[in-house]
Image (tube, rainbow, N blue to C red; front, side, top):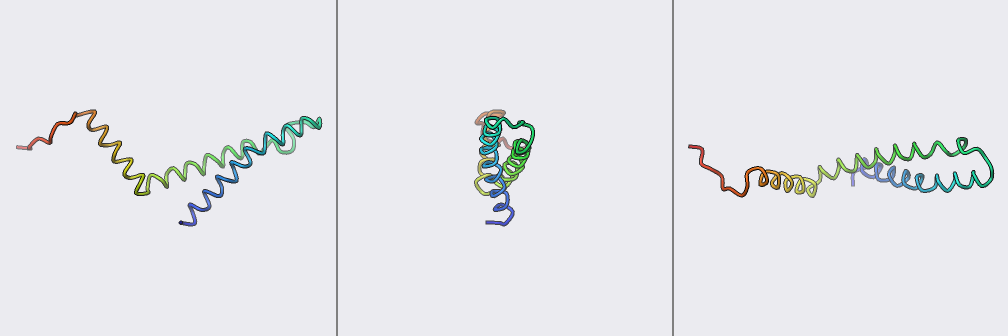
Length: 93
């Protein structure tokens, strides 16, 4: 596995955990009576951005993989069949 993919997956897992832990932390702050906009509240937007970056990179990596190329080709064929039907190719005479 390329290092870049490993880093992006690790980043995605970290961001997902932060997204899960931030609401729990905010709830704990509210129960203690602390102001919610201080402390850990910055994690939510940061985790969302990191998750988006990791997901976009992994999505791009998947489209470059053999399975992604097959899927893209399958979609192209489906679109062409929708446009032209199942007609056999015509001779260009």
